[in-house]
Length: 330
Image (tube, rainbow, N blue to C red; front, side):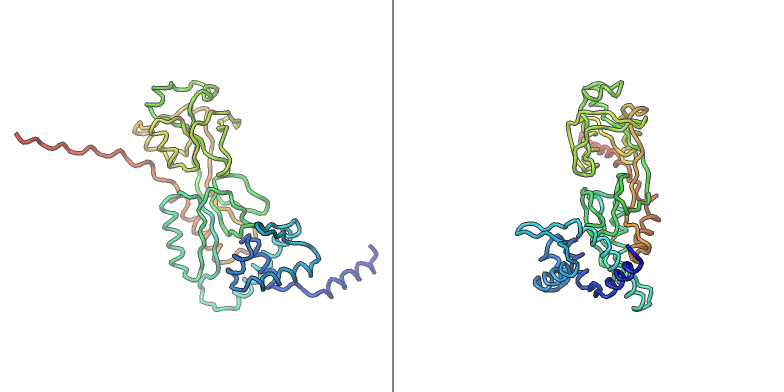
């Protein structure tokens, strides 16, 4: 393109009216809610008003952003691209607005968090303490094994054990632990202890779900490879798997911090410890941004300070003490 053509193109772009913040807000909230009715309720506007703003936005850009049917709402490729940029624009607007509001040091804004369904009591305490200490922060906690889409779902922070990250996300490790295969003495006595990893295929293995959705089929080896195992019991609940192992249902692969006391007192026995296992990490994950909102940064910092000590789960409760025998009357 010639210099004159470039200048004309720039002038055309400059002559176009900029997108309205209300339209971008209507669009991003609809994408995050996956529902026109829910988005309208969250924005506290009539559904018809939301529909008009979305229609004006699509007309202004000349592209279809959302696909709407009677049962489902989905985002087009153009809509996905716009959402990423619109989210950053709205965050910048919120920061600009906050910069001229009350300068009293109080944190304000919405904080949307994704956590596993069963977590250490310390995390519950941290969430409650954070909400109490910052009453002007609205906290939304989503507890699920689902591997949520942080950006698409509008989440600020997620706790994850997986090392896999989507583009544009940042992870900070909170705690590290080792995975160890364990079984009860009763199970090993009944079925025999496997002497090689190949023998695991003949054993009952207690398995997790990958990304909280797909049943596991392999366990990691210390060499970096994987071995196929025969799953007999599947759960996305570490507490349930640990209890199943103690009950003699099979061999489970669990974080060592969950079974340390069981191993010490002999309630569980390590299986092929030199061959099976790997390191696992629990991390706080958030979107990579030039400037994080102050309340999001404060929560991430609180997690990082607390994680190394509080996220190490207490070992299984000690065996109950025997009840004293009653003396028989003579």
